[in-house]
Length: 180
Ligand code: HEM
Image 1: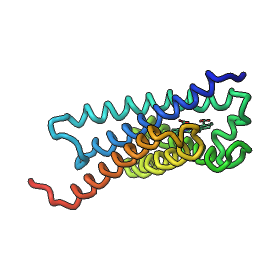
Image 2 (image 1 turned 90 degrees about the vertical axis):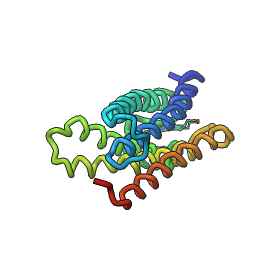
Image 3 (image 1 turned 45 degrees about the vertical axis):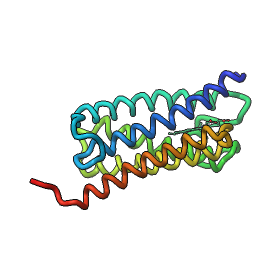
């Protein structure tokens, strides 16, 4: 199977995924006790949004990967999507996509069985969301057709700024002693 529709689907889902994944990480940072975010927004609401956006990202990621694999115009197999640096198509940046996907799957699966895991183990695996997100940004910038488009660059810069800023705000909040 081939054709421009698959290519557009892959590029389109890639860009939307970048935004959704960034928002998911941002909400994850905000959902913790000392995360940034308005105090009037109940934490259960932020956590619910975080979960739902993660679910939506999973669906979009499935479409993103499937549209790349079923497109015969490029030589990408299901194995290449999961095992980093095994394929022939843009191995470095596609491999980073695979790393991001593997980490994403680890975070997702451990969240599904969270109730059966020690909290510390779940938390440690959940931290892999940060490298997964960061690596996916490098993947998109490195392999994307739109990578040289100024609009795409601004979008990437915005995503990076949002997550770094949220991380800094949270880091500072941790250092400031809490009022009882
Ligand atoms: C969470 C993981 C991922 C994210 C956030 C992501 C995001 C992106 C982004 C933003 C782009 C640039 C789209 C553009 O050209 O505008 C892209 C391109 C691409 N991605 Fe991913 N990706 C991920 C994982 C994967 C995986 C596992 C594969 C393996 C099949 C893959 C295959 C591709 C391909 C082939 C392109 C190039 C499309 C083109 O020709 O422009 N991605 N991705």
